Image 1 (tube, helix red, strand yellow):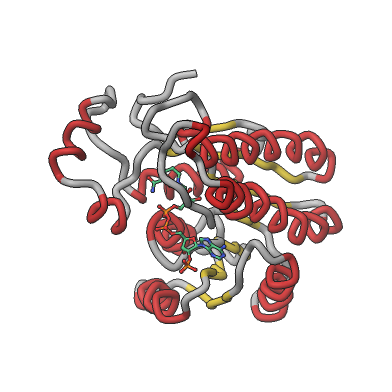
Image 2 (cartoon, rainbow, N blue to C red):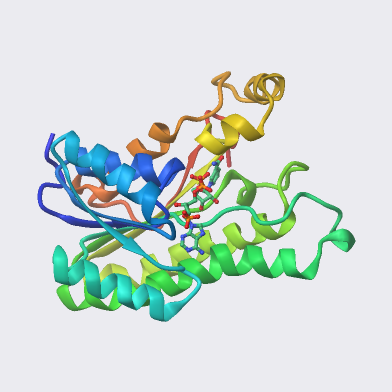
Length: 252
Ligand SMILES: NC(=O)c1ccc[n+]([C@@H]2O[C@H](COP(=O)([O-])OP(=O)(O)OC[C@H]3O[C@@H](n4cnc5c(N)ncnc54)[C@H](OP(=O)(O)O)[C@@H]3O)[C@@H](O)[C@H]2O)c1
C-alpha cells in the first residue's frame, strides 16, 4: 500500500509505544518518516525496524516543551526529507497520579499542562506556518479518553490538558482549513503499550477490558490505523473531529 508515498511525516514521541506504531504504519504506507524522542538508542531501534521492512526513516531528538528544540527538529526534517506534509503530535503522557483536587501537587499540574497542552501548542506553532505557505498539510493530535468524560482513574491535570489539546485542534481546523490543511484529534482509551503491559497487573487489565463493549483494551496498531486514515486523502473532507479510538468505552 502506498497511499502516503513520498509524503514527509513527522511523528513526535515515536521512540516507543503508540508513536512507534504510528511511525511504522505511516512508513509502511510509503511515507518518509521523521522519528522523534529524547533518547537516541530506542529511536535507532524503531528506525532499523522501519528500514528492514523497506521503509524510510530519519531520527530527530529534542524536548517538545522547548520551542527552539522543535524549530531545530523542523529544520532537520526539512533539510533531510523536505517540507512536512503530515504531522502527528503524539508526544505526551500522564505525569501525576489520580488524586483529589486539593491533593494534586502544583508541579504535577504544571508538568501535565507543559508536557501535553503546551508541548502540542509549540509543535503546531512551529509546523503550521510551513503548511500554510504550501497550502497543504494533515495534522493529527493525540488526546485521550481521559479528556472525554470525568473518570476516577484519570488524573485531573492530564484530563484537563488533553481536553484543551482537542479543542485547540478544532480551533486550528477552523483557522487552517482555508489553507488546505486538515487538523483532527484522536482520543484513545487505555492502550497496551510496552509500558502499560508492565505497569497494569494482568488481573486489572482483564477487569478494565470488561468495561469496554469490545471486551478488550487497545493495541497501539488500533491508534496507528486511525492516524493513517485521518492523514490520508481518504479523509479529505474530514477536519476538526475528535475520534474516540476506545473500543466503545467512550460514546459521546
Ligand atoms: N498508552 C495509553 O493508554 C494512552 C491512552 C490515551 C492517550 N495516550 C497518549 O498517547 C501518546 C503516546 O502515549 P504512549 O503510552 O505511547 O507513551 P510512552 O510509551 O510513554 O511514549 C511517549 C513518547 O513521547 C516522548 N515524549 C514524551 N514527552 C516528551 C517531551 N517532552 N519531549 C520529547 N519527547 C517526549 C517519549 O520519548 P522519550 O524517549 O524522550 O521519553 C516517547 O517517545 C501520549 O500523548 C499519551 O498521553 C496514551
